[in-house]
Image (cartoon, rainbow, N blue to C red; front, side, top):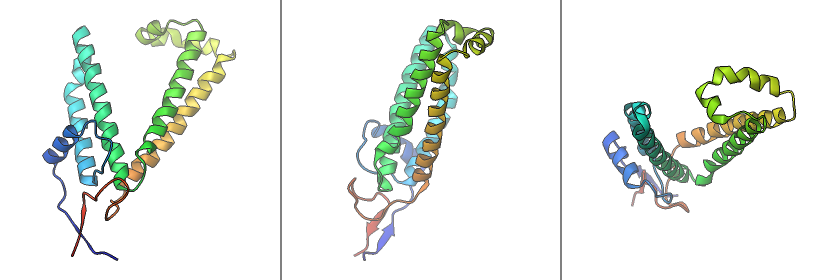
Length: 185
């Protein structure tokens, strides 16, 4: 059995820089320090840029573009982190796909009730009673199914979180060389 030495942890600036450079890199591995420092950087960036959504149409467009970039960055980072633990990056895709199916089921239910989705966004309190009254028909099953899928997605997200907390697999795995451990000669 080989002996492995640990490389120094990655710092905040280096981790954020590496994550940004590898924004569309879904191959390879990312060690824990890189992952969690970059997650902190993403959180801080979100706090700073969140007021953009309240600054008119341009702010909303810019906010949505930044959200798309952050989503891609987060997905690639999580893929690489899961690879480092010896797991497929698609573990993060499963909760995402399940939640999207749940969202479609809920939106379909609301639209089939004859409720304008834009009115629902603008005045949710006024329409909530109307939705509750209409839930007695068959569309309530779609809403319950969508809610159940969100719940399952949340549970699976906890599993992904636990995987991201686990230590790196020493040595080379099918996703590449370990960014944390080097083999001692």
